[in-house]
Structures are given as C-alpha cells and as structure tokens.
Length: 215
Ligand SMILES: [Zn+2]
Image (cartoon, protein in one colour):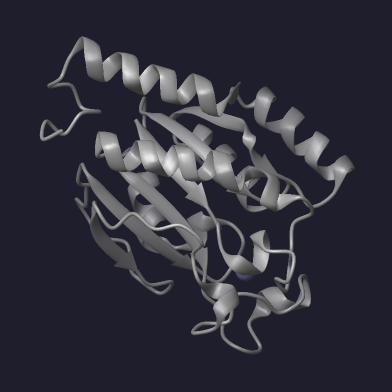
C-alpha cells in the first residue's frame, strides 16, 4: 500500500492561505489520522508539494501560491519517523529507479499535476505503481487530487480515494472529477476503512509489508 498525500500545504489548507480550498480545515483531522497510521505502520508515503518561484507559468491559471521558502509552501503535517527523500521539481527520470519501503518521499512540482515531476513520471511509466494499492488524499479534488488519481489509474495502480480526506475548489468541477475518477476505476473509501484495513493486516500478520516489525 502506498499513501499519496497531495498538496497538504498551508496555502491550500489554511483559511489565511493564498489559494485556500474551501472547508479544507474540515479534513485536517482525517489527514492527521492517516499520516499517523503511516508512521505506525511504516508505510511508503509520497507527499506532493507545490514549490513555486515568482513568475511561474502556473500563475497564469491560479493566483501565486506556495512560493518557496514562505509559510504558505510549508507542509502542515510531517512524518519524522520515516526516512525522508526530497525530490526537487527539476529532478530527472532515473532508469531502473524503484521506491524504497518505509520511506517518505516529498516530491516538488511547479504544475498542479504531480506527474509533471519527471522523476515521479519515470517511475509511473516504468510500471512502478502497476497493481499496487494507492491511497490518495489531500487537496484539491478537482485539480491535483484528480491528476494524481487518474495518473495512477493510468499507470495500472489500484487507486482508492479517501472521500472524507479530500476537498475540492468548486462543487461542480469536484462532482465532475469524482465521476471521471470512478469511470477510470478509482474506488472511493473512507479514513476509517483505510485505518481498519491497516490495523487488521498488522494484527493478522506482523511481518507483512504494512508492518515494520519494531512496534
Ligand atoms: Zn502550484
């Protein structure tokens, strides 16, 4: 199981943020619960993060947000118990690269689609996500979350969207995005369901991939 924690940064998730997603604070608690489970079960987690510079092309579409080094660009939640790998937005694709277990990848991007990061796109194109269960949550359902879920589905992953841990910018585009994701084979789940599955798997088999073995 791989967690995809999408753009949980202050500019999107805090009412004072530059590109605040309405009611995003309502999902803080569930995202915290999911990331706490990632910590307890040593789950491979990929956090995408906008990392912009003034004048970036994306600012033709959205107001400036997540400028590098500012409060708004910071991630709200952290995973200090997992090995951290930071992947800059201009990282190249690497032939033969694989994801390591028990690792927290923070993947920077300058376009809302996280697969605009060539390193991550390289992994997707080489089949790294094929047949793997990918749990997607964060913001915004109608932009970055949609791009993550559809990109993973296109890469052959078994994608689950955590419906009570995502929020969209606008009602209509969010409903459209959900339809599009369902049509692509994305299943909807809930925070409770994900946590129950992890806890059950851990108690059934302490040596399986979701349990690190030292707790
Ligand atoms: Zn951005």
